[in-house]
Image (tube, rainbow, N blue to C red; front, side, top):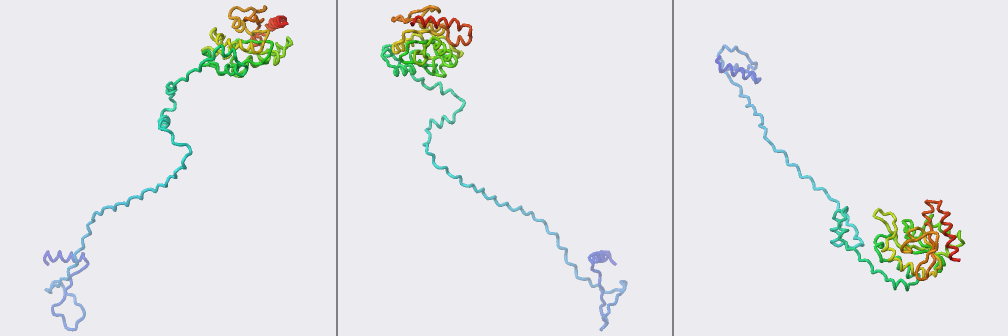
Length: 309
């Protein structure tokens, strides 16, 4: 057998198809298949060639399908708020709202309101009680009007025969809007009652300066000469309206401020053209701090009672 046939035989065996041999002139009627030895010279009938192997499909690069675009998010309509009753702010207010809220520089740009024209001495001298109290409350006769919390009017009977005078309102007086307020006021009433006076009916309590003087640290201080002179027409009018015939000053600043100079305890002083008798004594605040001075104050009260009688 040639080398080529041998290779073909092996190939056919591997494919499961062996070589089939048939006789050239098979006997008539013989149906049985007779096998012959390969050594004889039969005519080789080659079986039909097997179908050519189908080549494996070449993978075709298929591009991934383009993902469908995600649907756009549905934005719920924002309800339109009902129109406000207030009109739109002007552009100036909008700009101001956008500015730094902590900034206060714009305060310095605001114009300072002009101080009202002070009332004159002649006008004060012609006032009745309501006009006088209004003039005191709105007074601009000195610089204390720029720092006061409020001006403090006098209190007591409008026709009092006694005058009780302090130097100026204290912090508490300014807060309470009352001359000699708090415990000091209660002590003053007791001192007046001790010499048989009725505080509500017999005494008018006032101060030389109607606004509280304060120092740089905010503490109470004595009134200055300028402040005393600015308020003096109010005191003169109070004296005229009440018709008082006796006066007592409470505290050294009240005595010196009224007399506009030296003042002495333990003697009767005279004030003004009418030569009003004046007796000086301790301020009730001083007596609360130093109760041992109450005996001296009692002597001053008795001197004033005798001078009045």
